[in-house]
Image 1: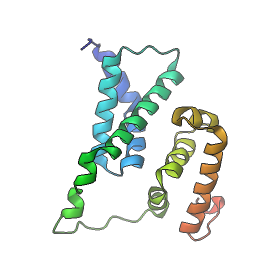
Image 2: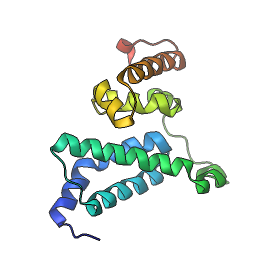
Image 3: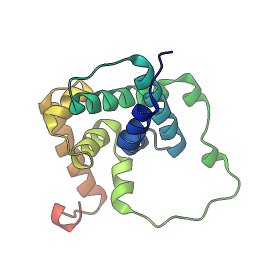
Length: 164
């Protein structure tokens, strides 16, 4: 394992932890799994010895690594043969206040939810998202457009000006 300096590790956590956690949560729908992905990405970054041309290249690598780690978790045999502890609980937790937009976004399939998240929450342009996800820009545009349509249907026809 290569050594790293504490300053670099602190920089990574400060700069990218929220991004990785939010992105991972959109894939896995579990805070604990998202935290595990965050640790995995940081560990891989710190041990890989990867060099970057600039901060955007670094950020794109972080996102791509997080997406790949999430996909690995989703296709793991362990995940398909176990159940979430919350699903097995005998006593129901108190209901949280419903955030209809976030609930609607979380209900979208991955192929729509992830590009929508990267575009609206992280501010990436479609060609940047396409590069990160290994898709064509036209495909990403179509998925974002379809995601907006699905959200309109789910939320009862509200327009962008009304909160979607």
